[in-house]
Amino acid sequence: MLQTTAVVIEKSKAERDDIRMRLSHCGVLPICFEDEWVCLENIYCIKPSFAVFRSDSSESASRFVNAAKAIESGFPIIVLSNNHRIEAFVQNNWLENLFFLRYPANHQTFQATINRLANVKQDLSGPVLIAGSVERKKLIQELPLVSASQDPVLIQGESGVGKKLIAKDLHRLSGNPNSIFNLIDAGDVTGEWIRKTKVRIDSLSRDYECFYAIDNAEQLPFEFQAQLFLLLEDRAPGGISKTGAASRFITMVHRDISTMVDKGLFRKDLYHRLSVLKLTVPPLRRHMSDIRALAEYFTTQYSIRYQGAVCRLTDPVMDAFVNYPWPGNVSELKRVIKKLVLMDRVHWENMLPVLCNTDKGGNGGRPSVCGIDTDEVRQFLSTNWNLTLKQARSRFADKVERKIIKAALAETGGNCKKAAGLLRISYKSMLNKAKLYQLV
Image 1 (cartoon, helix red, strand yellow):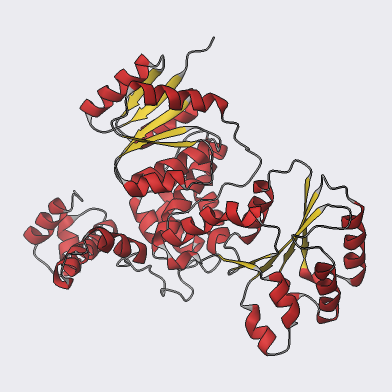
Image 2 (cartoon, one colour):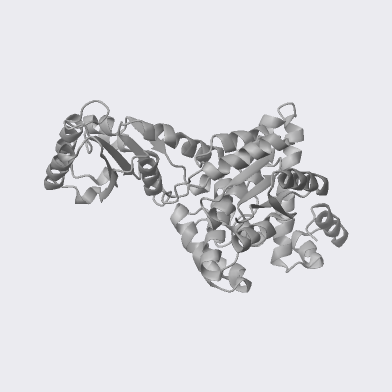
C-alpha cells in the first residue's frame, strides 16, 4: 500500500513542526517547505496525496490554490487559517477538493478531514474558473445556485472575458450524466435550426437534459427572434418538455441588449424571456487582482505543459501586466503568457511592448506603474474602518512610492545612483527608500 504523503507550506518553523507532528500522528508522511513556489514545484514533481497550506493572508491562500489547480485541477488542499475571509473563500468555493480548518486543529479534526479526502471524487472534465477580485469570486460562487434553476440565463460581458467557460461550467454543475451541451453562434440560428431543436427536445426521454448556448445573441436575426420566443414559451415551467426532458437556454452577449430593445432592434418579449437570470462578467482592466490571479494560473499551466517545470513571472512583467488595459481580456492574457513561456525569460521584458501592444493607444507605449486596485482599497478599509482619510492616504501613498521606485530601479537595471537621477532625488534618499521597501 502506497504511503500517504502531504506537502506542507508554512514559513514559521514552530507552526511547521506542529503541523508535521499532527500529520505524522494521522499516518501521513509530511514534506515541509517555507517557500510556496518551491512547494508548488514539488507538487508537480513528487505528486503528493494532498497539500496543507497554513496562512492568514487571503492573497497568499488564493494564489496558492489557483497555482495548485493549474498543476492538477483535482489536487486536494487543506487550508489552515484564522482569517474569516479565507474561511469564506474556501467554504463558498466551487471545488469539492478544498477544505478549511481553523488553526490550530487537533488530531481528530485532521484525521476526519484526511478521511474525507479519500471519498472526494472531483470532476476534472469541466473548466477551471479563476478569480482574484471580490466581484469575480462572487460571480463564480453564484454558479451552483444558477445551475440548479431551469430558467434561461443571460451572460453578458466584453469579448474574451470567459462567457463560454461559464456557460460550460453551468452545464457541468447540473450533475446530469445524460446532459447534452450544444453551442451555436447566433448568426447560424435559422428557422430550420429552431424547428430541429424543438423536435430534438420533444423526442428526448425524461432522463435527459439539453443545454443550448447561443453566443453573440445580440446578432440574432430579427426574423427568427419570434420563432425562438415561441420555442421558449412552448416549454413548461422549469423548461420541461412534453416528454419530461429538461431544456435549458443560455445566451451570451457582448453588449447590453436593453438598448437594442429600446431602438426596436431586438424583441422585448424575447429579451425578458432570455434574461430571467442574468450574469455579468467584469472586464480584466477593472480588477488588478484578477489579472494577477489569472496570470499566475496561466503561467504555471503553460510552463508545466511546455517546459516541464513550474515557472513564475518576474516582478517587472507582473507590474506591466496589472497596468495594461487588456482590451482582449482573458483571451489576450492567455495568448501573451503562452508566448512568454515559449521564449527565453531573459527576453521577457524586452518583448512586453510587442506582445501587449503597449505602443498602440492605451497607455501610450509605456505602462503606468501607479495603479491601486479598488478591491484592495475596499478590503483595507473594511478591516481598518476607524482610520482617518489622512492615515489611509498615507498608507496608499507609501504603496505608490514603492511602485515608482521599483519601476525606476527596473528601468536602470537596479542601479540606485541612476534611479536617483531619474527621479531627481539624492542617492542617499534612494538607497534609504530602496532598503525601506526591501527592493535591494
